[in-house]
Image (cartoon, rainbow, N blue to C red):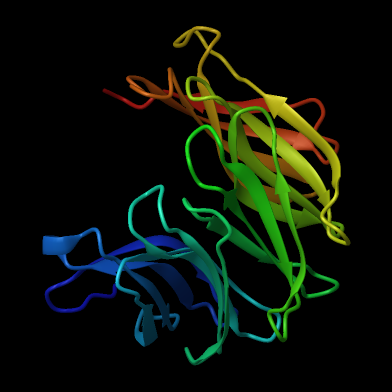
Length: 278
């Protein structure tokens, strides 16, 4: 574990490193002023000993949401900087750290007043480009899915794309199979969301296809929210973590489901659906 005196820490994402240790990201905060968080990244060895830790702090809220280890043993983390509230001032950030925790480069993106948020990151296996996924114009009813493709060594932008479907939508998680990007999220208005899965070309960010999905059960009516929050690729299959609620505002009931589909997005199968104990 990692902790500092007088502060609280929360891990939002962690990965196993090449040497069987851990790289973890999240945020650190003073419990008395929890709105002003600092982005946190730290590395452990295989026994759990802290090798190094670093924080990224502005005068407002900063968080790292996801991290990867790259082919040359360095690390790339994504998240937000300088948010004054959930829907104001968000600066999307992509930061590259060396294997020993030294900041190598950082790229920031902000084009709207609410700002932009990045939730996931991957490295393409052939080009080693860094691709980050998140939300553009991060405000209910207006936000769009966003992908950013960067050159690995410099962090310079190869392309940036926004993906605007009906109502409010964002990208939450992604994977790569055969050099094609697959990304999941949710879209719709302020009442109900459907999960969606998008196939994107790494060359230019153009959409190959996009499918939406709504899964129901005896616990819910036909209208409910499907939040696609996690995506993993294995043996040319896509596995999706789906968080289902009975509505957007009150969310009195929740379920968790694991879905599987092929790389064409067809023939989705619900592998498991569970309702938490009450």
